[in-house]
Length: 229
Length: 302
Ligand SMILES: Nc1ncnc2c1ncn2[C@@H]1O[C@H](COP(=O)(O)OP(=O)(O)O)[C@@H](O)[C@H]1O
Ligand SMILES: [Mg+2]
Image 1: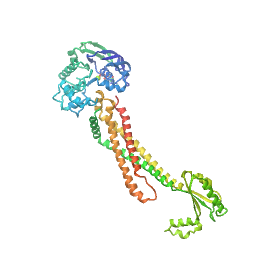
Image 2: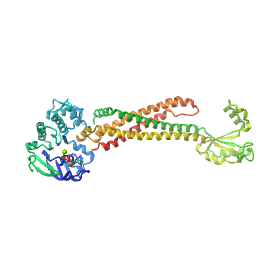
Image 3: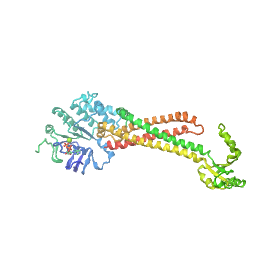
């Protein structure tokens, strides 16, 4: 599903690499936590998977393709198979819940009949079927993140990437989001989630990859947060 | 590709940025109108050249008694000289299309007609006017062939080309046309800069939408299309205004004022306006789309 082979990424303005010689593999169907302090390279790792950034050396394989050999015009096709969720939700404020999810389908040219069918379905999966006409500012943070997850999942992607999805939420709400991502994983989607939240990681007992200043310092199946320290 | 989605995005984009859209429409209209006027002046010069070159002739004035040109030192032109000149002109066919001899009497007659209401006629005698050959050339630009063959020959006082006078006038018109074209080009450059800036602002103000579009895998084409169409629609509206002002120039300035006042010459017809209109439309749309395309390539990359 994902293979990092001696990947090093240094941003142009930096002298220290954000990721330093990282090699690891993530299998289809896995649920992976990416943990580590701020600035350790978690977001950089996820951006490399999305090919928002390219590595300086090494190669990144995603869904059977080596991304540095993928030409620019093929990137949209790659991203259609990857759902993404961020800490700041990234919803359109002047569109309703339904329209926010539908937007993701409209811009890849899906027919209207398809949109009318699948958007209510996915909103039911995330538990927002009775709030379809609300606008983002009429929803709680947890609900907004559910809309974002619905948008990421509506195409039933092979892979879902979540960069600190609970970073702006209180602990109880975070657990709800966590359970939703777990459910999506059980439906067959590979999930990679970066987080600071020790409690969640400890509860879930899934694979944990820990980064520190760009190095992988731990890679443990059924791990807990901060176990190695 | 969903047409209804794209059109609603374009409409929303144009409204959101109304003042900028308005500025783009107006600059496109002004610069293209100027461009159109310069093309119209060019068409006018061509029309006048066709009209006048057809009528101009080369005049070969013969020596009279008392002419003070060096070639007239031996007095008035002799019959032998006159016959030789006529024969030489005939030998220049087919360049020489027509040769017409105007005697002193005929010259005087024509003069009296031209200045019928002027007291000058009283002071001019038949003897003061030169006799001449009026030569019409198949190709008026070949004047030099005639001039070099006849100028300075004994019995010939002067060789005159009416075309030279016309050419000065056409040079003036061409100069005006060049100035209009130059201003039009400067205006078009300003227009392009304005469109580049407008696109930059539009891309920035919609970065949230375009960011989401990139994330969910919308193609570059789909992301950029609404912006491109917005620029093209604004340019088309501007070009429409420019075409309307060109039609106004043709019907009010040319047909309404100039043509009735200067009846001796021809003016451009509607065919010129009809030929220029699509050029303006295409120039406007192409410039705007290209400016938008290259700006967006920089600001909305994958
Ligand atoms: N766009 C960028 N330009 C320059 N440096 C960056 C950029 N993004 C991240 N970095 C640097 O790379 C390192 C890793 O950042 P990041 O991957 O965002 O870490 P994390 O998500 O774990 O907080 C940090 O030192 C950060 O300052
Ligand atoms: Mg981060």
